[in-house]
Length: 137
Image 1 (tube, rainbow, N blue to C red):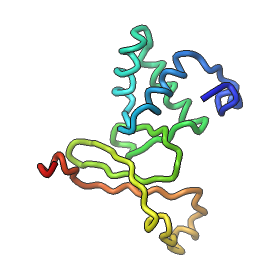
Image 2: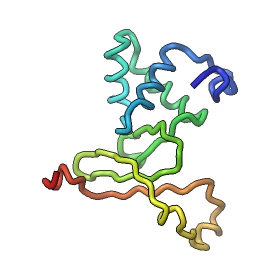
Image 3: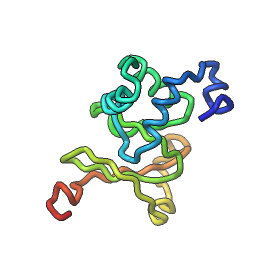
């Protein structure tokens, strides 16, 4: 992320705190929620406020540098991987793992979707029990 990214186009300043918050989301593949991101950033920046982290996450989502995952009634998770991929979500522990699938990518959308609007992108979220929670790992 640099000054020429979406940050500069939105008119908002790219601060050291915002950069560190983005780096925290981007450095792991575990799709942290806002409270987890806050705890991790605070380890390196003890003076950062929870409000700063939360508002920055929503700002990063607004300018297109991260995406939100999950359902609104669940804790919102964030993903800095903007490449096309899908997610496996463990319904027991909440773990989210990225996966790629050419087969899923090639699925033709039904006409009912086209009667609602046009798809900008598709993303599948598989919900199940991870091997760790199923006792198979």
